[in-house]
Image (tube, rainbow, N blue to C red; front, side, top):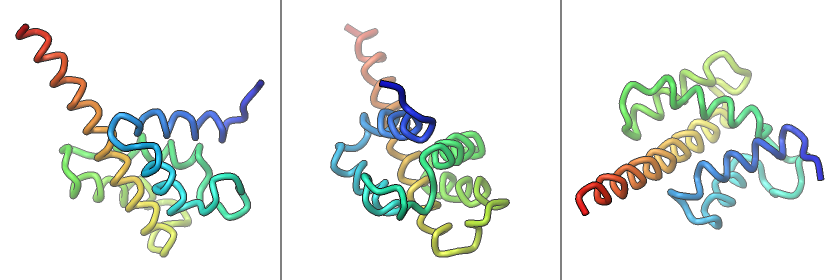
Amino acid sequence: KRYDLEQVCRIINMNLLKGGLPLEQICHLISYINGSLTDESDDIIGDALLYEYFVKTLLLSPRRTAESYKDAAVAAISSSPYAGTEHGERIISVLTVMCIAYSSTVLQRTAKERIAELL
């Protein structure tokens, strides 16, 4: 089966988060901005654009803290039609959580590698 860009980006987004959040919470997080996961007509933002903003947020964040991620998310969407809107606030919240969860995964992996070096 072939996937379109939106489906591939949803899979990527979910895979990036699965080490830091259980699947149920990932679905809840995505539903927070896109309603029903099986109905694209109620989406605030497409999965491809969400992925783009996620990457921008990670790149714009000078520190790996919740506040830094939030500020970076604001900057990532600043030139979009979402900036300063209720939808934008939801997207910023989701991007912040996504970055925290992803960072948690990276730190956990690093800790396991360091422990393995000690053994």
